[in-house]
Image (cartoon, rainbow, N blue to C red):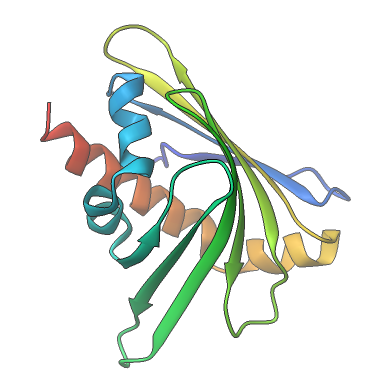
Length: 154
């Protein structure tokens, strides 16, 4: 089955581009990143904090199959409703450094929208290490859940 979430990673660059078209109006797609209850459902994580505003922050916690807890956090630098979120992302207690994420939301029409994520890593090696994980599969699965969870709200 073809993955609907596309990842572009050019050799020798410390960035990736993630794009996905959703069968959702742009305000509902944006809400999927703004509403803690919805974020929790599609990400499969506990939202401990989500201050979706300029200079806000977030903290998520998930538990793996062996019962180990993992935390993800960041600073939200900019929020423009239904247009963009600029934030950092850190996986606590891992060797991965903080990454910078630019999320762009675009309406294609009244019923469809696109999310484009531009993710910048500290180095090419850090980016390549991330891509060796089941990263592409995981983000595609998460975006599939996002479509299902928010699609039921229509």
